[in-house]
Amino acid sequence: QNAHVLDICTGSGALGFEALSRGAASVYMIEPDKTQARFLKDNIQLLKAQNCHLINATAQQALPRLKEQFDVVFLDPPYSLNLWQELAHLADIHIKNNGYIYVEADRDLSQLHLPATWQQVKTTKAGTVHAGLYQKVSE
Image 1 (cartoon, one colour):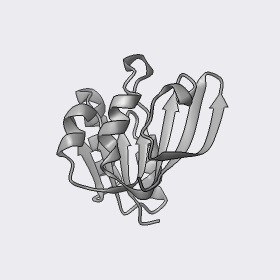
Image 2 (spheres, helix red, strand yellow):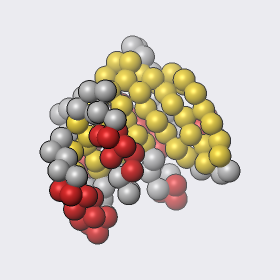
Image 3 (cartoon, rainbow, N blue to C red):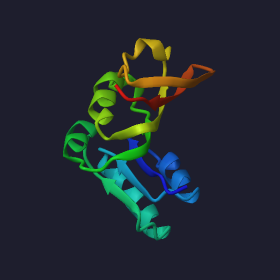
Image 4 (cartoon, rainbow, N blue to C red):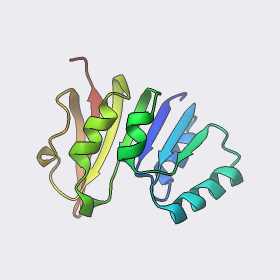
């Protein structure tokens, strides 16, 4: 409820749209693919989601320009690009203390070298997908 959400490498938008349906105050979606971004823009308009903001750029371009702070961050980059560590560190300054980060990967999460301020809350595995929930704690 009333969370400010960042969806990095948005893809279908399922995570961000679900957050909106559960009462998020705002959702920022970062999606580099132009075709996918048009699809997301159409869905944002269809849903009349005025509190949903789409950024059509790579996460590496968008994250340094963001000014906002977020309560919840979704980090699920394309597995083949191996971007977890880079994007996690770029996103870290935008995550509020005690904010939550959801990470999906195709490998054990301990191999991702996530920021030391991210405390693991829970991990699961379904098939080849590893998922983890982290909470940012003060340094």
